[in-house]
Length: 492
Image (cartoon, rainbow, N blue to C red):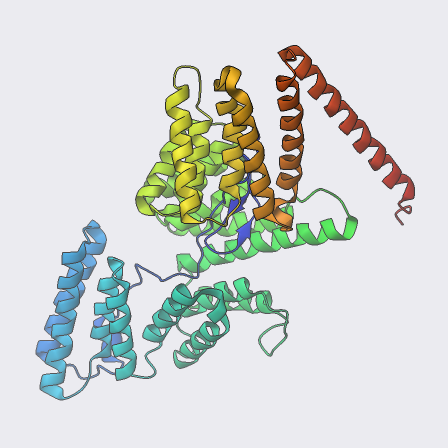
């Protein structure tokens, strides 16, 4: 059974550990995403802002709404009804302020948006943030949230505009908005521009500076620690890629010094607040790169325990279990991830592989069918992605054909066509190059097997022919490598 995996992040790609044809990601959660759980504007903040000189009735309503929001955060009892109720309480405070003083109360309107955001009612939340910004053009926290919604909805095509909006929010905040600083750093890392400006030689330099600014303002701000750890993790990987290109080697191990810096940032953050789930997820990613798999498993488990709805942690725990053939645990984690995001392609694909890994004689028909059902769903979700076709071909070649007995030829021929479909969909994409090579080899093997079956050869003869073919291919590959060494100039 093929056991090689490709891995993912919240945004971008990351190298990972592996089981099975082509699959998933270890998912970092640093990111360019709406910051659900952001803290509200308090009465003191409101009094120093555009809500200055609050009317007594407005202040009382505002404080009651704040208490309700804090209680739901503490007890984790948010639902659509409670989100709407808390948002209305803040709206009532804004209405009382307007009625008694004639002034807007953007802080209350902003908090109403946060209440909707707790329940992922993003349309309603964005409307409140827009209203708060309309009431006060320098309301940097509302501008920050709207910029993040813009990125969430439009993606990388809007990254320059989103970065500009975050920079404006930071300027309006006089560099005191840690949330905007951290998200700006994250988007700069995503953009990775090499253009120099007054703030740094490139986007990574600017990102590091913004994270340091955020921690200088609030040395306990966990998202800043998390993003700084991801910064060092990405630098470690970039250095490994540069070293590989420079030396022409196959090794691609991340830079250990940078990984240790990333791990140190995580340990500092965890000492300050061990209850912040994303930092444990990031620590797990770092441990994977340090090849400490047990440590990675423990960190992903901790992240899930702290936040069972943490999709990326569920996916990472599943992927790492898949890598060392912990198929049952991987299946459970993928199912948990699918409860959070039922239409996630990678989770469907991972579940198909976790089920496939558990196939035995007792459950053969049931588990083959279940694995196929997940692959079918994945293909519906993303028809042009090649991974599901490759893994469907593996399932057909290694399981369905063996279960077909004397009627295996049509099944084998179907598997060959699936591998060819994968090759066509993978195209010239470098990340699929190894899998394309293996798929072509499998098609050749299948053709040999089909020919022998049609000619009535015995199973032993088929095996001997395939073994002879593999020996010839290995000899040819060894000869090619030897020739390349002879032709290569001596390294200075």
